Amino acid sequence: MMATGPLTHLEIAASLVATDVDKSTVFRVLQDLISAGLARRLDVGDHTWRYERASSIPTGPSGHAHPHLLCVDCGSVTCLADAKVELKVPRAVGDIEEVILKGHCQPCREANR
Ligand SMILES: [Zn+2]
Ligand SMILES: [Zn+2]
Image 1 (cartoon, rainbow, N blue to C red):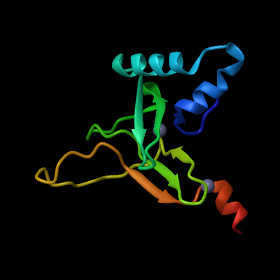
Image 2 (image 1 turned 60 degrees about the vertical axis):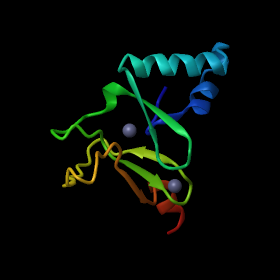
Image 3 (image 1 turned 135 degrees about the horizontal axis):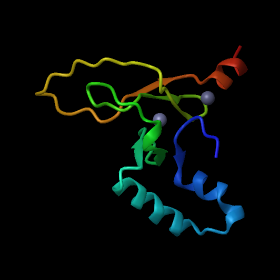
């Protein structure tokens, strides 16, 4: 499966249709992969869990996963595996789990030219 960003449960299930795996099985397997540390999930704020392979996640010294770009035009989520976002968050504020950047993905930027 070639993916440029994390996939939703439905997208994963859809790409497995040919293999006859049912959706609830996919969901269970995803939970298993997460507990085993092989996958992680993120929520960009649209109440949809997206999943990605843990091996595609370079974590910096801070332990943060890579940031993601949420396209405000089409709602797609792109992994910014090479992007470095340094956050200086005071401990008193809390713990940061996700860095979500909002913007326009390449296809949308092209289309709006
Ligand atoms: Zn877009
Ligand atoms: Zn990602």
